[in-house]
Length: 180
Image (cartoon, rainbow, N blue to C red; front, side, top):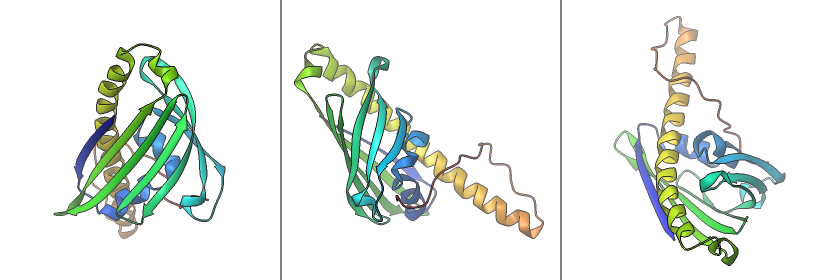
């Protein structure tokens, strides 16, 4: 099954990409990812392996192995994770648009026979939940990138003696270094 979500964001594609490309940031914007840790460090993100803990509908938590399989700096990212009876291929795209960008998140999910045995409603329930989940994820990613941009701008304003404008959002700690 394939599910997609998109959002327009008032930041440059490179700023949004910098957050999404470091998979350790997944729990900060795709909240169903409870944790992500690097299990095999590498110089290039494509060579690193990650352990992901993910919350399924109904609160079931699974662990999966995740790897980046394609990475076009600043424009797209593709990774797959497998575990707990699921195989998920995720593609994310960052397209310049007016003064910002449009990000699109696409997830292709394959459910194992073991999970299908839970009943015919499970894949449909999962699809419905995943659609809402992806919409929340791209919205949260957009908020995170905007907050990061506002904080960065506020920091430079502090050095000049001017006071930063209140953003109405709390600052979010986001990793922006490359994997490894």
